[in-house]
Image (cartoon, rainbow, N blue to C red; front, side):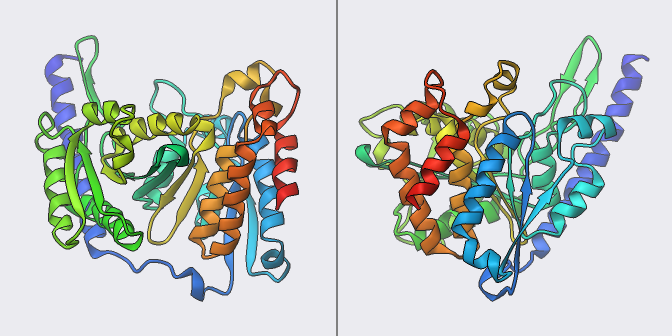
Length: 381
């Protein structure tokens, strides 16, 4: 195929992408009323094992949920629904990031507690997480990070359905010469993530929201992200909105002189993915952080780490640390309205993560397992 033919095909593909994204923009602009969990007679929680260490940590997370939510489960207020099929083997066999029957099962739930899923390198199979975020319109990735002894109390609002990830498997190329991927920023998509961040700041007495981009280089996408965030900020007098470039913000988070001054962050997809892992490492490692993916109709809660295939290959799967998925479960319980139960679980997790027992669990040499740590946590509830 000639270079000219590749270019013509790429132009047609780009036209299709533009039309799709404009249609998505119109749907977002129409909006929808958020789900009111307080008024619901029954809440269905989907349980998804995932890949690698996912089924191992999710088995313990389900046990934890059954203990914390025992009363609500017994009267049918809460339903736990196990969802099969979101495995790398099934997805590869079907050539689908999320098979249709699995997606239908997921959409029959209200919230999802999900183990990590593997995304193959190369090829065209999209990340299951990216697909779920788009299909369920989970536009806000919310990640709290706390280091109380240093006065660090951060929360990150990462835009979750746009940026580099939304079209990550649909770039164009002239083989052997050129490849291009695309980044997407929309007005309604940015406005709603900015509003979510400022609403959180307002509701929780926070006085500072930091907007993190690379607007000096990515002038169209990041430039508009910054502009829209400041337009939203104008509706929240008393909350300071400051601008930072992603490279200097990564340095700020390791600067002990200033990092405890930051409170709420709002940022595009890729930067949020990178910097929240850095923040989790400051907290104690990616295994200690939970992650919430929130939309108006659905929400998905998961561990911040991946599926750890090397642990499985080395026969260490049973020693996987469940702290991150336990934190995600606590965030989910809070999201669906059981604040007291979430507060109790949060306190227990903080206590357990600071004990010698946790050091033993994360230090593999002792022989302590994922289940033993789960038993320890549940003994404190």
